[in-house]
Amino acid sequence: MRRDADDASQPTTGFPSLAQDYAESSLNLHAYVVRHPEATFFWRAQGGGMQGAGIFSGDILVVDRAVEPHQGDVVVAAVAGEYLVRRWYREPEGIMLLAEHPDHPPLLVSAEEPCECWGVVVAVVHDPNRRRA
Amino acid sequence: MTTMAICDANSFYCSCELAFRSDLAGKPVVVVGNNDGCIVARSATAKPLLPMGAPIFQHQQRIKQYGVIVFSSNYALYHEFSQRIHAIMGRYTDQQEIFSIDESFLHLGAIPPADRATAMQEMRQTILQETGIPVSVGVATTKVLAKLAADQAKTTSEGIWMFDQETGIDQVLAATTTEDIWYIGTQRAKTLKERFGITTGLQLKRADIVRIRRALHVPVARVVCELRGISALPLQTIAPPRMEIVCARSFGRSVTSLPELCEAAAAYTAAATRRLWQQHSLVATLCVSLMTNRFREDQPQYHASCVVHLSRATNTLPELLATAQETVTRLYQSGYHYRKVGIMLTDLTSDTLIQGDLFAADPDARQQRLIATIRAIEAKFGKGAIFFAATGGPTPAWAMRQEHCSPHYLTNWQELPIARA
Image (cartoon, rainbow over all chains, first blue to last red; front, side, top):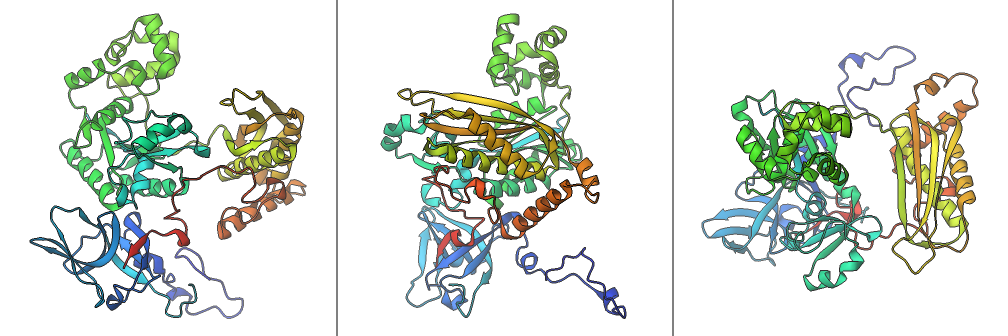
């Protein structure tokens, strides 16, 4: 059962619970992962190019647009009308997008071509048993 | 004093459609309303090509010629973006009036006057950064002037317009027709021209307010005050409950049989009643209307409506469903191709009285428990998890046509945007 912070916990009918005074609100995973609710979007990853970063095809990406990308951050990038999950490097020649799989060579997008960091991946939801597939 | 701002999104529905479609950036995009009928939003590049409100079927040639991309309206998506942009606007003010799906009035009194322009510019940047939705901001002393400033803002690259000098305001007002001023509209503009010879905003600002009030009543007099920089329309930070609830949508195809019409009337009554519950109201009057497709001049036309006064104010769905279906049956004439059924609930009052009776030995108590149960089930399992069989279920045969609807990116796990890894 999910309990919110302001919900009273179930009272005991017999001996009063000694833990009651120490009760804290239940951990809320959504609040932990989603730091900026207005700026956070969920995406679906497709393909194996980021396996080295722990992102597998079918995983859900939590993408935050309020976060500035640092060098090497995993981001969703908008390149030539397509959205790519890659490591983001700002280089003098343009934007370097690195995959994490030997089959996917680095992609250098020159400064003249449109390439935008759509948002930074702040968490990955992965089902190791593939029960949800 | 520039204390009133309005912030509104540019081509809001189109901007939402483009949020996950960078491949369409810069292309002409339109969104069409219910049943893929008329254009309800145009991207900046579509504006010179197609008129607002035009039925889409009249412009197929142009749409093809210019490669215009057409989307059916995806209200689940727009609602999500709306919540987000209004929440961000709320960070920049102590008092916010959410005016429409993509507009808020913001009180700027708490920000030092010298910092207001910077704060509004920062708000614009933040909304764009966090949601991808571009917005414009108009700042002035009153709501009516702020609206005008926002129109001006759309013509600049900064996306902000501040009316902080009288001369600047008058210059814009002189170039604005009365029709384009908030609340005035075509009909009142006509009266202003015929009775007073007033055609521009500046003339209206300088008009005799007493004569205006006599001819066009208090709301227009308030607009005149606001044009003079005197606030007459204060912020409404709490939305008043709706005085009427309307649910009228056209069908995906023409409907000729009475059972299907009854089903549609029941479904719309259920939708309207759900909104009635949300705002904790009771309804005393129900209006039901039927109409054929007025664009099909080759077909016989029929339009009928009926107002039913209920014996007492109520919120119980079975009673409202029965009334709606009886009325449709009474209005129905065979041999017509119906295109639309409308249900309107009016004479609304607060439901607090009936709630007070909840534990009394009242036959209504069971109905109130039923309402609470339906609402609890819907809150847990989503809309459509439970329905009256009379409404035809989640996807009835006559349902609205939405051939070009984008995915429900933000509200369905199966329809998330896809990033290639």
